[in-house]
Image (cartoon, rainbow, N blue to C red; front, side, top):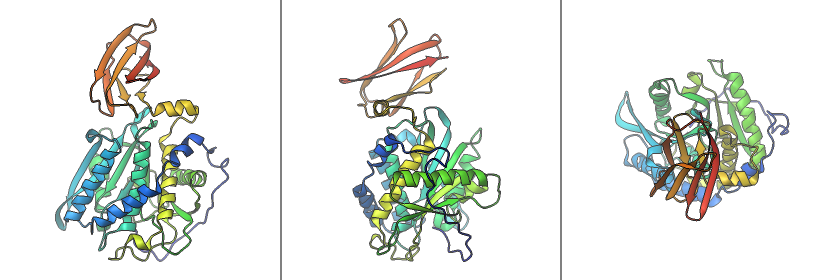
Length: 396
């Protein structure tokens, strides 16, 4: 949640024509995914989050919310190996807090990450708007992108400690981002905080946030990304947009680390944040649902699904994918929506099967060592029941 700030420099920017911002145009494949966003699921998840209680550090409610989030990701098809916890303590508290990170590996740039984040702790009340509203959008993005190959890797991050001064995100930046060798390569950070709207008001504008703080090195890049975000809102949701500066939420430790940031925030700001009355009844669930649609469209754009694919090729991507391609050492198999029992084969240009392995209960992503195979082009084949998925790959 953002602290109230008296002096704001606000720039009103409405959706640009789609040909003016980085040649972004409406993508029917993206829209087909966005249209699978479920208002019923958004409302159900908000209700469940509210029922978990006041989510302060050291409370059972916060632990239960962490478990609830993990179970959501698992139910969407993410595996335990994709889910990690980042634990920390901080001065003034003996409570162990945990950030939850879910990683989806990209097919072209597996070591470059698009981060979408929001905090799951609350202050004084259940925090249904601040920030259950952001979490349910992230969950919908995760649910719908789980089986879609994206060029860039995605990290879905659920931070704790935001209400205590951005403790969770600061710890993640210091102890994970900057402690990775080499340093974690982040394409951008997309923060969702308090996007539930105000019951009884006309909620039809999204605030899109860009970096205007120091260090200023990435301010121009943030402005570019935020304008792309604005365009995505217009292309894939019924909402209009308003640009404001980023401040006082979990993207700021990343901003201080000189990463590129952007974010979503509600335009009509609730008066119930940080109170015992931050409940669903004071929110606008339809507005929250439209935020989720905009976030899905934006993440398809930021993480990059190949826009040159035909509808048939895009649908085939749901059935499986192989990456990286070309490859040298390992070929990763994403089984998509196929059954986890399948046979993988590698066939050379003479039609000879040079490798075959049957998985009885495959993980979402499996790896095959290919360094010992001859260099050249092969056909990678997955057979699952009566379904067959193939793709050409190159071993270098």
